Image 1 (cartoon, rainbow, N blue to C red):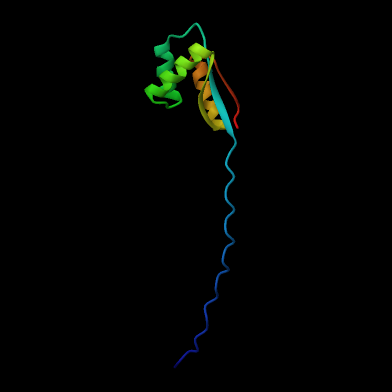
Image 2: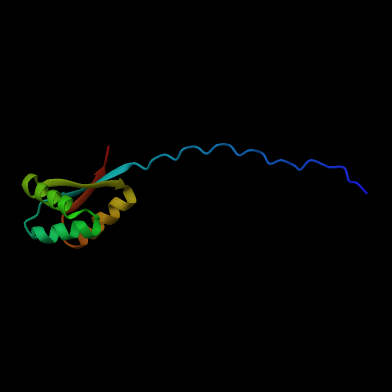
Length: 99
């Protein structure tokens, strides 16, 4: 007994996904203070902002000499987390919208 072949139903082709918009950047800024030792600041930046020692040292020196240094630019939730962690160590850190 032979069966007539019936075509299998085809699935509709899904519409292409829209590119995900990038999250806006927020800057984490380190302010100079007269309380913390530079080695502690460098170590803290390495630990919580995940900077290399040379980059953390550059940020620390820039904040010391100019009063302010950009530590990193990231999405808002991560910027808030890093700022909160560094602030809990008594570092002076703020965030602001980036470009």
